[in-house]
Length: 266
Length: 290
Image 1: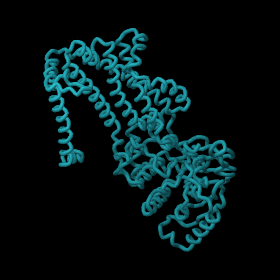
Image 2 (image 1 turned 135 degrees about the vertical axis):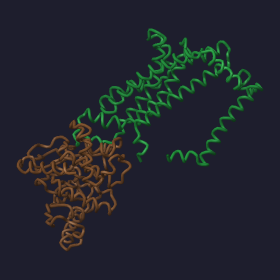
Image 3 (image 1 turned 180 degrees about the horizontal axis):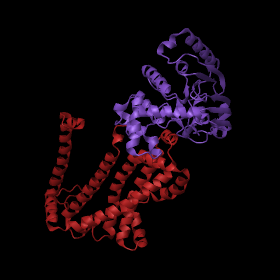
Image 4 (image 1 turned 90 degrees about the vertical axis):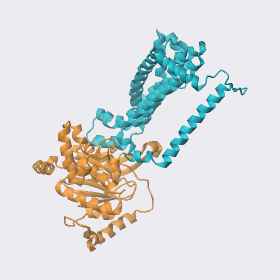
């Protein structure tokens, strides 16, 4: 309730107006630059579709139902890759965070692989996996794995050793300590990783789809360029942004609802 | 309201008939080394003492003297390098709900409500949810916090958090209650109230208590006996009986006899003064110093 009253205060309204105004200004600039075909030499707007053209392309796309197969393929790939990454990232992260030995075995190869960007994986992924579908899921997986893994390790290591000692004094077994202390203690950090991982897995998926896809938002964006439907490029870009932001937001909200105590903590 | 007291009394009568399960501590030639390599040092040196069942013993000493380390060994978090340490004849090896531990700063689980924190020990023993919540509520009544059962620990004041912590330990009916400067972080007024509350609880649930403090007034007010420790390496330099009648109230602290004992303790501690040592914890050294 307190938050509701705060959000309607004059200062908040003014802030909101500024934020919306800023977005409106960007659109206005885009509209002017694209209709006037502004050319700054280094960067040119002569081939950029106008916002109104993009809007009508959105309407067209919704009417034609062509979006559906692209959307479902992308969502399917992200979910499979992301869930494998979440499962592996959390379990390996718990192991590495709990045991110095596991950390020494697991982390060096993973740290070596971590800086390799998703694009660099594409050729090898195509060679390694039986189908382009599987290789795209793998790329999505690599994107999500590391933020989830590293945040889990960090979360586990940050659990107060006094809480573990207390749990032992209260009769908790090793498995109960993992379930009752380590996991809930690391949960806020795990959800931070899950939320970041959701964003990066979209990012990586789109890259993969541009190169080896037949359906999907990334493929749609790239093929719009190839067949010179320039307005659809921007529709694709906006879709990627919306889906990435929306799914990250969902994960974040899920995390907040599972850790209600966390907001109160000092 | 009565179930906890009744079961506590039942335990007590059980304890009386079975002297070997009653909370007697026997420490012989206990030495504890902390740290590794060149940084290793002897925190506790060849300490002998016994604590009788139901006795309230304070360990008094300056900061860093090893009194918390000794408490950690009693809890089973630290293994002594020499000597034997037994509770009712059984060697102390691991932490156990039989030896409940209260730290200086609360260790309540932030993700569990107050009542579920108190019920934690029962959950570990497989008691079902309805039963353990009912017992936890009884325990919260004992510390006067039944109205805060559904709140999160972070929503409580420091004094309330320590009361929940005490309830969470006592629900396991420990033979030994270990307290590491539990009121040290509270303001003076709250500390006085907590001391009185602790004595009144201990009057009802008679378990052996080992209470670590560097506050002379606190030790004299609470204890049947004070073990005074010297700075590093920690040794017991005096075993001081405190014979004030119980129940005790705050007027006690202004009596001449109290003042006399206080002066005596001050002399003992001053005698050993000179070095300021970092505070040790019952869990050994913090990881970054190892």
